[in-house]
Length: 211
Image 1 (cartoon, rainbow, N blue to C red):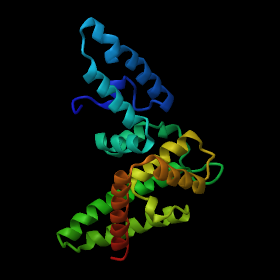
Image 2 (image 1 turned 90 degrees about the vertical axis):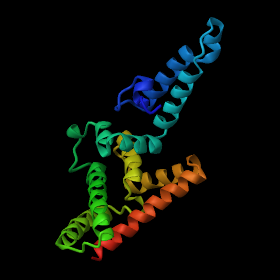
Image 3 (image 1 turned 60 degrees about the horizontal axis):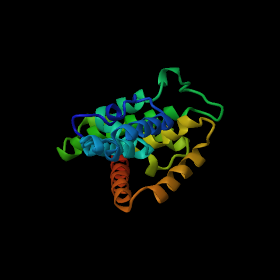
């Protein structure tokens, strides 16, 4: 599993839609299902397990976003969308969600750097610079009425995937969809892990802004 990317296993690109991912899984399942190959003396159990594991991750927006980030950071998530052809400055209902997604991502990079400086107790001029940069992104996200608990990149990636499917959706409804997803589709353990990451990020943002 570590040698192959889930996209390669299913034979789809990082831009594949949910429908394309499902279709690829169904086609491969017919070919590699153990019951269809055992009569020929071929054990395809391993291949089938890989296919199902890849589908389990890529068919879930939150898991897919987190997996994309594990590949090449936010670069993979950006490749999922044709952002160059997306109007990032203005949509009918205000700024494009891509603007807020990028702002949250840049804020995360700032926090990552500041965390290291705080741990090393290097309260230098660099921390002051990072604080000013962070404040600008905080203002952007707060102006959009996106609460702090949604600012972690894992969450913003899920929101971006969902928004991209319907760009007319309001941010308030988009956040409601995410809350419903967490409530009904995410296991208790995964939910606690996500909450822990989000809380840590919120704390780090507040610490830097107050610096």
